[in-house]
Amino acid sequence: MKLAWQNIIHDRVRFLCSVLGVSFAVVLMVFQGSLLVGFLQAASRLIDASDFDIWITARGVPAFEFGATLESRVREIAAGVPGVVETGRVSMAFAVYRKPNGKQQIIGLVGADPNIGKRFPVPGLPGLAEVPSPDAVLYDESNRDQIEVTALPAEVEINRHRAIIERQIKGFGSFLGLSYLFTSYRNAARYLGFGPEEAMYILLRVGSGYSVSDVQQSLRRRLPEVDVLTRQEFAHKSRVYWMIKTGAGGAILTGAVLGFLVGLVVVSQTIYANTMENIEEYATLKALGASRTFVARIVITQALICSTVGGILGLLVVVPLVDYARSLISWVYTPWWLPVAMVVPSLLMCSLASIASVRSALTVEPGRVFRA
Amino acid sequence: MPDHFLGVEGVSVSFGKGEARVRALRAVSLLFERGTFSLVMGPSGSGKTTLLSLLGCLLSPDEGTVLVEDVAVNRLREVERTAIRRKKISFVFQAFRLFHSLSAIDNVALGFRLRGGRQSERMVMARDLLNRFGLGAKLHQRPNGLSPGEKQRVAIARALAGNPPVLLADEPTASMDYQAGRNICQILRSQVDEGGKTIVVVSHDPRWREFADRTVVLRDGQVEQEVKNP
Ligand SMILES: Nc1ncnc2c1ncn2[C@@H]1O[C@H](COP(=O)(O)OP(=O)(O)OP(=O)(O)O)[C@@H](O)[C@H]1O
Ligand SMILES: [Mg+2]
Image (cartoon, rainbow over all chains, first blue to last red; front, side):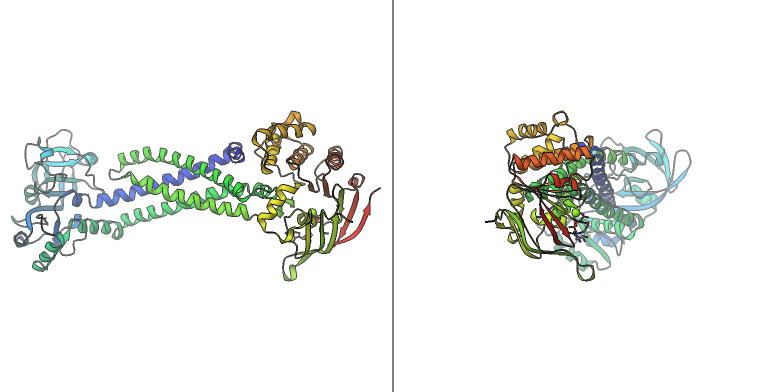
């Protein structure tokens, strides 16, 4: 084992390069993974924040951002289906926002009934109790620079209607590159010019004792002209839409997949090259009668040290890096399992590469020792 | 009755296939008696290294038998041949083949380690050997910091670690000056005289004749001449 350590200590520069290679791979994998996970999460964040079981959307709506209006009777019919105990409405549409300084911009306006879910950003929720008016408008802190309000409350215009921005909230940054404003359903309907009973999304809560899919089936029978989806189905549909059908999502997905593959290749290449560097010495060891396990142990020890140090260094670098990225791109997100999920295949690749190196080291023909 | 300690009987070795096929050894029989010093000479490509690889259990012949301590090693499996190399045979190479990251003493200690030396004794024995070869002041030098002659003495010390009975050397003095080379010759000769080792040296260097008991000359994969030195 001394040989393994001495090789590392003696060839410090080489070791450093290998460690950097492995940590680069870890950084790449975790960072690209965070982009992907964050993007997916952001793509269905508002759907996930509701706590209703079923979403009714106009036929063919691909994602939350692209809703179309439903007729008023849909809500009445749905409410009459056995098992449906509560209904709620959500709307989402693009609107013209006029800042206090007079500049105008397109924003996404989200309106929701106050019962929609405790995590859903709606004025008048218990968590936001200190907001005085149920018609207040909220924005996410990540959009502060676009919203350009200096003091709260601030008087602005949305689609030429007077509106009051009252609060800054957290955690609902948009990934569309344009800001969202959140307000009550009633308020949003007014700004958007909906008729009194028009809605965009109708949300249904299924009573205990009823199965969501049974209720979904009977809703589908009663309302064949709309889409009836469970919350999870709509969230999934939204994510798939953004991920697959849009260039940005496709780029992020490709980036993550490539990052993952490149990371694995870099890791295995690094470990393998490290072994090949000393292949002549393994041949010597074998000629001198070293057993297979002896040679294998040296190779694996070196690979393990290299990948462990590289992996730890990579994680130490990527955590602050993702934090920094989040200050620029609010939706980047690293769930706790992501580094684990990246480190496990990396370790696997390390082991595979070590096994491959061990094989090469073991199959190296000891007869070559006489060739100068 | 001749001692079948180390030798080959009717061995043939060829490399490559078809047009490119090279017959490195053709039906060669040679015996090396216990406690003798043999020199193998011959022009380049005559099969000297191939012969040494056979004796060192690093290569199996296409035909014929390789004997090490009366055992036909060419019939053994790789694991068993590795064990024979470990216990009975040691090598000295033209290119030294020291472990570049280990100091002189660690290189020799690794030799002991491979031959099962006890951890507590390895360093002491390695130091003793190097002291005997006049390297007492360079114990902790890495190979990089040693002259060719010094490197080869470290390599010989590593080869002798654990006391294997056979030592095979391929051009051990080719990369050093006259005095250093002579020094290596003397060291190996004394291993035969005092240590009872069986040594086979392959070299172009006629100077070795003076130290060897016998000279074998190969040409085109066959024994051309065998002379006992006086
Ligand atoms: N691994 C190999 N693959 C193919 N050909 C080989 C191999 N090893 C040896 N040969 C060929 O076998 C012949 C004998 O080689 P060998 O190395 O035994 O010669 P040698 O007497 O040691 O020569 P030198 O004095 O140049 O070291 C040569 O023609 C050589 O090219
Ligand atoms: Mg040769």
